[in-house]
Length: 574
Image 1 (spheres, helix red, strand yellow):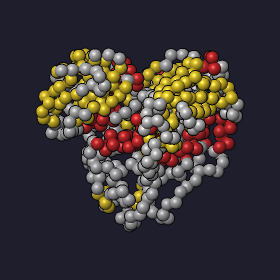
Image 2 (cartoon, one colour):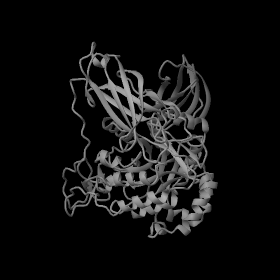
Image 3 (cartoon, rainbow, N blue to C red):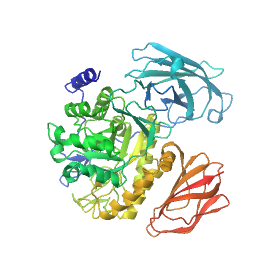
Image 4 (cartoon, helix red, strand yellow):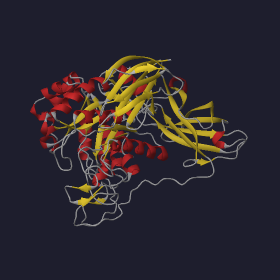
């Protein structure tokens, strides 16, 4: 079965279709912008186009599977359905008895499940939802629907009808209901409600949640010393390895004899693989060779294709071509890539991945003047190492939030990870971050919904290595914390200027993360409320930082925060 698929995909490598877009002849660019003093500024284009405001209310109908993939051992699945009323995206709503934005009109859903060739398999016709709601969970009982596990996705077509009108709305999405693995390989899926990952191996049927916490690690700088480096890395608390193929590992052909002992040891070291497939936009052959060798490995968690394709201005459709090829080769694992630019053809490049990493490096760099190229840096010119940044921690959270806002308008599901800066003393960056700065960058990413952390890069400074090793045992290694991050309902909480707070509520408990963004600290009472109707009963467990938080009137209160203080703790809520 796999041989057939790989043969088909291999033919794609020789097909035309990777299209370049117009760049000025002879001008070196990054994020589409000229950056050498010998070149002048020009409009790079590629800015995300915001839709115009519609005075007519719109139905922004969105339907997607709750999980990115299901296996035949999953007896049931579900669809997430949004019936949001918008003035930016969607289709015009008819005049309803009350103002559409305030209406709670019942609407009827008809769900048709089709094969890839358009043949109807099953229909669900008895669902009624309320207009202007999100994340409605519609059960999909696979057994009673008589779905057959297959490698190609089913097409789910959803039609919405409104009462007392002849208006209907239709949208489609893919549903992967895959055969159980019998080749010893793993499977990984994304929860589209919260963005977290879970995996299983071989013929297991129980999905295990995971919050990836690791570094990019170049082969030539660490791993090629000995396979024992994996055991050392694992002992530090990290749960994933991302081996950057440098030096001999990036040679052609790929040196499998040298690398296989590392793959074998990864499994016994409890290390999962974010596997770099050596993707090149003009040639898929190397990527296909990687997947041919690695797709059945039990430690494979996900693939990684593009490293800053937007910065390099790779052809706009190249990441999607790689993605589609990978999905044909191996539908059991998600695909990731890292974007470097703040706003340069996001939709085109992000189309090529399920998981988007944002590598925003704001520490110890001049974001308005390039010390490398001796030019200014702005929206249309220059390269300062952190595209359109201000040189503040907020660059990290702003980037994640902006990308998520793009996703909402485009109407797709993307999971976002953080790639905090763990390097310095080079090019644009005059020093390494301090250990305190590193923790702030990591938790700020997590607070804003990053569902994985891959820092650039290891080895780092002694202080950073020590503190991230300790932090890995909390963020990626504490089972209770992972359950909160992967399965809890996250909410941002206002707690004053210079303080960033997120709360994850799950049942009668909540995980609280407080990050002070000020180097000089914050004076006065810092008050944190649990969102919704919950009140804090007591602090159950301090996981990181200060344990001096008190409960007053159902709220968390602390007298001031020290500079770059980070506190993470679990509370009981009622």
